[in-house]
Length: 471
Image (cartoon, rainbow, N blue to C red; front, side, top):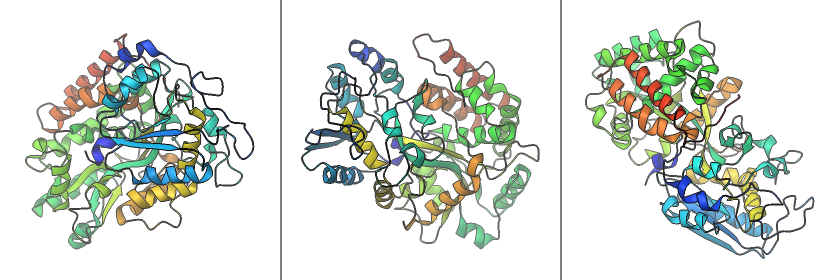
């Protein structure tokens, strides 16, 4: 398993279509809180113990063993143990969360903390619809562990709560903060005298120049073509405003055929028809396309901010990869060029039937402390959702560019969550449409039509629980 298996993010937090809903049907549970029947271990709440943790209650933590590894979790567990020395902590890691834990959800004996990530995660739609995840509201209202005068919620980056909320309840803690954009090598551009283009017309002109130099302007993961949906949708949102994303997330009729999406699809079709994509890209997976990019065979690639960490073994010295926002379509864009997609990913949850539910929430408070967040960033070179947690941390070049891009984006940052709500829509239906579109087999109109038909099929499927995004 590798870094890509972890995020979905888009993301942050993608969903897997599994038999989760059916398997969980026999063990529907209530939300979290002190009155939850699953909270066997209860302590006395106080200023020093705002969540009511029983100091000697055992805590079980199950981590997805992917690109982040498990050392960061062991460090968080040590921090928890420092505060509650009488607590015995059981740690385990697996690449198959669903296969390993599904039976335990069914029989009502889940762990206290689950890093529900990777290709083999448990479907969140099924978990949420069966009330199998504890409400994290008490965590948000608790004081930060080491940031005086602030609640946990006060310390989080914009969008961190929204991306883990279902029907207004904060249920999933997406711990990492990922920026999605277009990547290039600073060294390559400096050596060639190229500058990153801020408008689409300038981008096309630059692509022409790059191709003339014997380098393909673009490559992409042809076996996972949804990666190219990210800059296309971002282009549409910057052109038409955040309502473009809200309409897609809410499965509104013809949301994929809005004027903004049409303009974006027309623009991106130009790199296909002008042959600005590396030959053979449709047959490459994410590692192969990223390696070709690191080898200088292509100038641009679409990816999230895990790219640097994932490619560190093959990235040439001095390559200095950097992230940039998608170019603006023109002066009529509703969001500025600097606006970039930022979202929380890497999902954690406390099961509603966790035996030590309060301990699970407290473990999250440890993760969301400044110390816990900084330690994570140092260990895995990835940002967390804790604001200001990179202070004093020596960041690699690419991650430093991510921080700079997010700072420049500021309040103009945006995101979409349809991939969280309806994993099948992104991972299967939009993915297939992108494969056809970016390989040149269909044009913009047919591409958007396929995406819309996919969204409509989800909207009309009564077996799939629907969610409403309001902001």
